[in-house]
Amino acid sequence: MDRPRVTIFDTTLRDGEQSPGCSMNVQEKLRLAHQLDRLGVDVIEAGFPIASDGDFEAVQGISAAVRRPIIAGLARACTGDVDRAWQALQGAAHPRIHVFLATSDIHLKYKLRITREQCLEQARDAVRHAKSLCADVEFSPEDATRTDVAFLCQVVGAVIAAGATTVNIPDTVGYSMPEEYGQLIRTLREKVAGIDKVTISTHCHNDLGLAVANSLAGVQQGARQVECTINGIGERAGNAALEEIVMAMRVRPDRYAYEAGVASEHLFASSQMLAEITRVPVQPNKAITGRNAFAHEAGIHQDGMLKNPLTYEIMTPQSVGVPDSRLVLGKHSGRHALALRCEQLGHQFERRELDEVYRRFVVLADRIKKVQDSHLLELIQDVVKGNASNSDAPSSESKKFPPAAVALPLPRSAVAAAGANANESHPAQVSAGAGQAQAQPGPAPTNWFGGGVPAPIADHHGDQEDYLWGV
Ligand SMILES: [Zn+2]
Image (cartoon, rainbow, N blue to C red; front, side):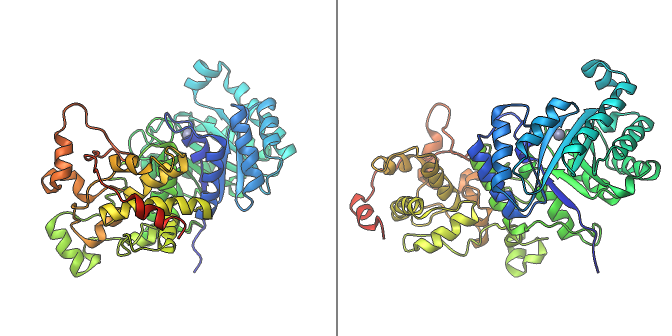
């Protein structure tokens, strides 16, 4: 039996990148675009070419390098923007021009200072122009959920007649409620001529925490594209989180019998890569990709998990790519195991880089016995950023990593993975070394995950470091 296919339109590199603290340079965008390709998203919105030279270069570079998915470039509804977007998309195997224009009275009156008639004409003209350049044209009536419904129907009808192939209905300000948003999609399907020939898309913001719920309500009423971002990053409270949309469909096909082309086992690595690039950590209790998403702390839960994981687990960590912590990394681990874990955490290294990661890993493993994913991610971070030279690496590491004495409540809980030790949130259980660090006066230093940084450890074995280099 065939389930309806839902197109996953990722806008991490455009809407997500616009959010405070999440800007990325061209190289970083390219790296993430390759990961999104591995993840299997259908559309990558790579940027807003007229907005800056950096955005233009990112769209151009991703168009040239990432060939499977559709690459979209954003444009306001005017000739200059559309032309610039098309210029950036020239090398794309599957280009899409995404045109937007606000349609709500409040935006027309105060932001654009145009009438509804002018708005309608501008939307139609811009889509017609985009269509003369590119077969794949998406149109978004910005602030659709606060737009007069009859006028929205009129605009959507006009852009479809002008050649739009996807019509996106943005809840730009995150104001809608799920039933309401679903109803809006249903109304458009009932009232707009020709809408059955185009793809209806959702684009929901999370100001009331309803972005994912609204998107799914839209899908239930016939939307077949969802715009979303990794970790739900985006303007203000963010966009619908891609990983939550995908896993809701996968875990509950009885309620959401739709198919997405995403390879869910790459979700965790994608989330980690984004967090590492932007240095914006994932909130620990974030659904699907947070470090606590698969950690079971309460005794009764642990007991149940040990007897049968189904007691408290609706999906396995492996299904979203959270590394299997039964593969413990220690000083006897080989280069292959290390490379595999790095890959699971979103990092693929050239041989030279892997040599450097391995060298530092061995020094660290010798000291702390069991290397957690959080340690590995910090170590990778140092190598990627080239923050420390080889000679000073051990001392910089020694400031960052906790002593070996921290134990984990469950073998599986290290899967909490991105995260620091599960025990860190329970000061009473933390070893003496870490406790002393917390008692230091002044603001406590924090690591990349926002966790406390333990006291430095003095010793390291420089001779072993040389011996193991290049093994
Ligand atoms: Zn948006």
